[in-house]
Length: 419
Image 1: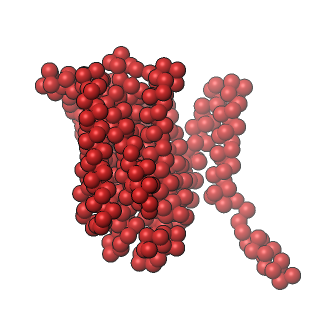
Image 2: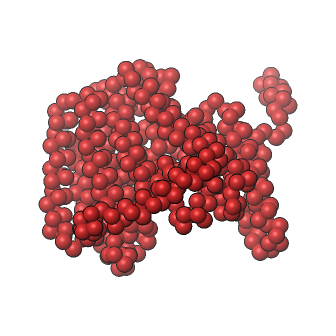
């Protein structure tokens, strides 16, 4: 009976509508409106969706600001979305274009939040790294088994694009698969598991050639090089460490030998040959022009930019660079909010890894590798809506957040490392 009274009293003190409850009701209303389609007036429906979407973002940001259990990086991401949406209403020439893109970014932010929260509860990177490894293996096998039947297509330049995605995305899948393989190989307890993780690396590199993604070919070299340097830096020494390095070198060498047989006919060879023949001006001239135009837009509208995706109205395309596109579309304020996400993530990772050993130091080395890869990809691609970037970053943020305040304390689910 006393328990029943206390429960009833606590229920009476609880507010009827919390920010989380209101957010769920708004999300349900958005779903119902979207499902209604042409049944509603086409003048009313877009306006209602915009209004409810804006209110939903506001409630999400408000709830995030109040909650102490949400990563700072996640809060910064939603603040970035809110700023971009609100400023676009004022400055964007095409408000609909800006808000549609803001809605996409908002959905990516919810994914970021979910992944970070999951890894905070269980601070272990093996699941997401296994996923990267498995998706790379799936893409490679899909292309290898039956290129015509299993939706593996080639564009006009002969570049492979598994499941119809952009060839650069296919290349990115293989690069992240290499990162996952390296992590799982180092993390494995048994030699059989180490070999299982490392054996597909030559295949990942071999398949990367047919995507013709020059940027990803450089990215895979960055991943391998920084991984080895980071592993040496964090002091993961021992017999297994030495053997892993040997196996890794052999895997890369094998990939190079196998690839040499198909090099002349690969899309990668043709694209690099084009760079040699034009002195690097084939694609660089266009990118330089877009970069100059993007920076000019930023200087003309330094505070709030021109609105999400509205740089396309002037430039004809996005700048293909996080650094330029964020500045041009959201201005200095948006750039400060967005790039602070990565600064906060780096500081958190460094703080947690300092003075620790074992699995925490291994994760710190993996994070350094991811950071180097991220900085390289930011030069040529937008990261804030990229699925792979957000999932991996969210995994790191949640993992390190889950370990904050427990540095030096043993993790029962990681106790095997101390055996």
